[in-house]
Length: 340
Ligand SMILES: C[S@@+](CC[C@H](N)C(=O)[O-])C[C@H]1O[C@@H](n2cnc3c(N)ncnc32)[C@H](O)[C@@H]1O
Image (cartoon, rainbow, N blue to C red; front, side, top):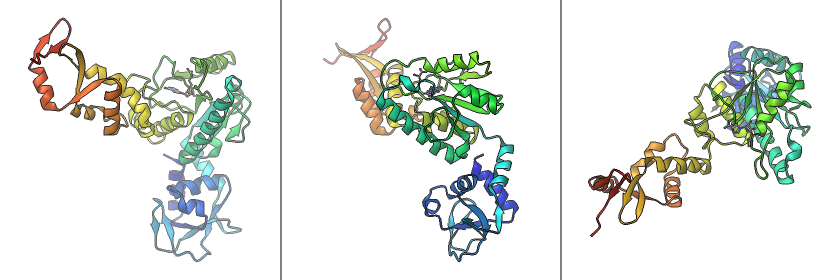
């Protein structure tokens, strides 16, 4: 469930199924209903009686319909039908989580990394807005994005948050669909130096402050390779799983860039390749092996690119059948071809 689902439910209960607006950012948005819900929480606009004569409106699925709206979304003045308070009190019942970016290690970053960190925090806010609203993003860096708290323990104690999950690639346990009230992501960018293990240090700091939490790593089929590590993608994976009910593998594939998928493929291909000896040893894969990797966000060209980079020869299924009819060298685990 996303914030827009709470908004839609409230509109439906008021007998409304068409809403209009003149706010261009909402009209142009690819999710106008979610955007309206977010605007409402920030009190940028509210829902009121339709006074303006609009020809178009949105249905509650966000489709444009050629019909005047029943209610108007914008600066209302009077006649408010749905307030931010009503939406937020209903959203509270759903139990949307907090996404907290812990920036305790900000000073260890280079100038370039700090810039990248700010970009990733801003992108995380965009992710949060696609599922929830601004107040659900907590940032322990006073950068004007999300809600600022000086430290994670301060936020957790003040808000009396009970179930806390620290997302840590070095954790012992795997992240699953289990829900928490707050997900902590390390405000860490790995472009230079060695920041390996820093997220666990955040855990140590929480322990010292007496905060109860669980550490979880996000894995793709048992391996961290292939899991994108940008803060916004980590936030999106978590929200897709806990709010949309997607499984972890599906959520990862949706946010995975081909470059990350290629890295994982390079690790997987040697495991399925057939070894062939023609005086010199080769590793061979079938064209159709591409289909075995439908759990990665790969295009055909990515498959061929990786094969070429790791020196795996791609052959047709017929050629592979021919290879498998050759002599199998048990000891060296390869087929031996006599080309003479
Ligand atoms: C670029 S990562 C930094 C990881 C850091 N070098 C370390 O070894 O702890 C930024 C943040 O994204 C989150 N993260 C990245 N990949 C993750 C994974 N596979 N599982 C859980 N959290 C992950 C963590 O919260 C981490 O602090």
